[in-house]
Length: 160
Length: 149
Image (cartoon, rainbow over all chains, first blue to last red; front, top):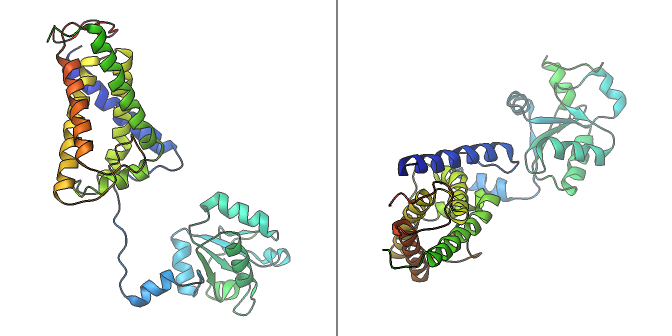
C-alpha cells in the first residue's frame, strides 16, 4: 500500500466519520461557523440584555413567526380549544407536562409564542411567567391572540 | 537510520499513538469548544474552523490507532509529522502576534500557547520522523514492511 493510498485512506475515512458523527449527534455543529449577529443600536442591546425575557409580539409579527415555523403554545383552557387552534400549536392544562413537551420539541433556549383568547385574557402572560420560572428563556406573548388571528381570517386548525 | 533498536522505535510509535488518541478524545466529545479554540488563532478563513473541528479529531484518532496497532504506520507517521508542523506554525504565529489564548491541543485542559508547547511539538515531530525514516521496524501488521525499505 503506497503512501498516497494510506494518506487517502486516512483523510477520506476521517471526513466520512466526522460527517456521520456530526450529523447523528445532538450537539453537532454547522460545517461553517457563523459570525455573531451585530447589534444595530443601544436600544437593541438593552432589549436583548434587559429583564424580563418575555416580550410581546403583535399580529403581523406573530404571523411572520408562524410562517417561519416557530412553535406556538395555546394558553387557553381546554374547553376553548374546540373552536380550533393556530395550526401546529400545542396546548396542555398541565404546565409541567407542557414544559416537558416544549423542552422535547425545541429545548429551553429557543423562542416560542404563547397566545390566549384576546388582548385582555392574561393567561398567555401567566403561562409565560410560569414557563420562565421552569427555565425557558425566550418567550414571546402574542397580544391579541386567538381573536385577532381569526378576525384577520388566518388559517386555523380544528381539533378532531 | 538503522542504528536505533526496533524495540525503541515501537515504544516511540506507541507513545506517539497514545498521545494522538488522548488528544483527540476531548475534541471529539466537544467539537464546538474545539472550533472556538481554532477560531482564537485568527488564521482560519470563511468559518472553516467548524469543518476542521469536525474532521481533525477523527484524523488524530485514526493515526493514533494506526501507530499503536502497527497499521499503515508510514501514512500515520507522515500525517502526524505534517499535523505537528502545522501546529508549530499556528502556535508560533499566535505567540508572535501576542495572543494569550488556549492551545486547544487536547492534552491538558486550559493549557495556553507558549514556547513550551512549541518545544513539545518539536519533540513529537522528531518522534514522527524517527518512526517514518526507520527502516528496521518490527511488529507492523499492514502493510507488513515499511515503505522506506
